[in-house]
Image 1 (cartoon, rainbow, N blue to C red):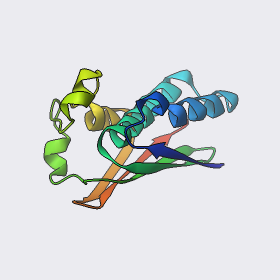
Image 2: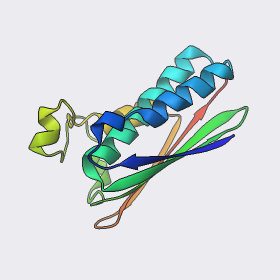
Image 3: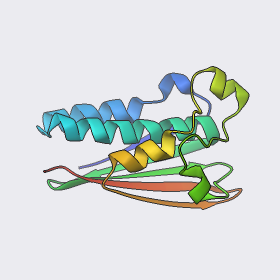
Image 4: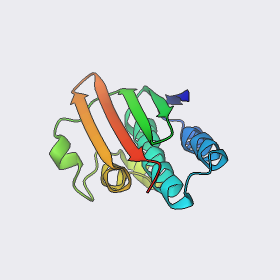
Length: 138
C-alpha cells in the first residue's frame, strides 16, 4: 500500500494529517497499538518539522506486511549540521514557532527513538529528506 500527503509550510492547523490517516490505516490492518503509537509519533514530528522549517513538503508512505517505510521530503533551508540537530533540545525554530508550543528541539530525537531505522540527508538551501522504517511485527 502506498500513500502520499502534501505538507504546507507554516500551516500548523494541518500538521498531523498524514499521521492521523496512517494511524487509521494501521488500525485497519490490526497492527499492534504500541507499534502504531511509535509510527504516529515519528511521523507527526516529521510533519511538524516540515511545517515549522520548510516551504513545503511531501510524505510518502509504503506499507507492506512486515514494515512501514516513510519518506519525508521538504523544500526548505536544509540542516547544516545533522549531528547537532539530533541533539535533544537543539532547535532552529523561530520565536513565533516556539510561542505556539513547537520547536523544543525534540523532533528529530523523537523520530529516532520511535523508528527502527532513520536516515537523514540534507542540502543547505535546498531541503531535507528523512526516511523512517519500522517493523510492523514484533
